[in-house]
Length: 480
Ligand SMILES: [Ca+2]
Image 1 (cartoon, protein in one colour):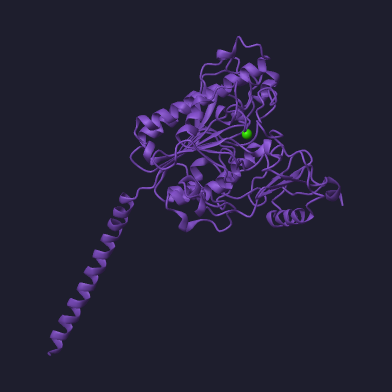
Image 2 (cartoon, rainbow, N blue to C red; image 1 turned 120 degrees about the vertical axis):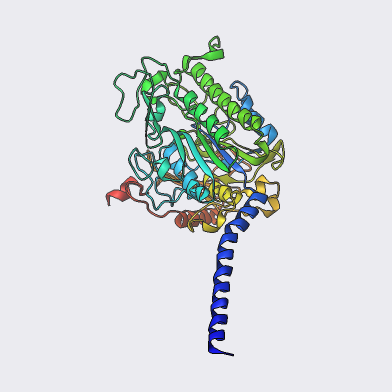
């Protein structure tokens, strides 16, 4: 063969190789899109109530407060009887929810003005990477204005609501946070705090209605792509700036004639308002024919409050449990939780599977087919097997953990039927058997030393000291 022929053949082979590579590059996204189209992951709608107790909904035994729309989620889907919030107050509970790490590991472990840093990955960031359009409507509390923790810097594409928790006390504020700026409202709030907290003297714009409308528009605008919608309703939390009138911001509604204290009539009206908003969101999902492609999960961030003049005992807001907001007994942390996904989750099903807020990160990312790039320090497990009616495939956690940093501090562990509670920290720990004693009244610590030792090992394993001020130490010890 002539040398020139050899060179020509090599050139031809080289050109063919280049062509092949170009073809492969072009075809890769096509293959990816094809497989994506055949198995589109579900939309995820997370509805979070604020301070709604385990006993506040009709489907959990409530008889006087009206929650027909939340109850409807249970009728059309799954009602969880042993689902726990991340903490017994707002900010840490939401931090656990978003980061997938319990309060022995996550960054924000108590109510504070802390903001999430870029290094703290939250699940909306993973969902967005997987092609989801993510929207947050309502209360945030994990990143102040201008910080690294604002929703748009943490995976959300859309946001309207309250960055600051005290701002979220105010149902008729002068502004809402909108993306990285503000949306001005017409309300008048004398002596409004720098963060937007206060009591309106003129109530013109109902912030919760404006937020809901934005969420409904989000559904309409993104119905054709996978989306994550987080509706974070600041009800039935009280306006704590309004003292004993903190539950009366919306008046009494249908409860005006009830022979109840004003704070309770106002509270009942707030619960009904929240339920109506849940109903409007469900109705819009169904009107857009998204029911079969959308998981709706409803839950609450902690147990019932006793603020704004309201007593959590008036409507038995903790139901069959003991304790309320700021307690580590189940009344403070076990929350009403319902999941609906038409055609996938069995209607009127009830699950006794133990679950917690840190399980939702692996659950949602598994549904989004985005589990391959998760942080390695998550503390929860995916609850997809339980949701889809395959409980035999459900991975069980060895334990759930909570630490709390107000009052005398405290920590608690749930492992199988057992519950360990040390509140305040440094007190004699209590050991309860939840399946036989849901009210946590019969302390078995002295009769079950083996279990007690095991629970203490879980505590030692779970707790890693956080950044100041989230250090667990009894006050006497901290002085040493
Ligand atoms: Ca709360």
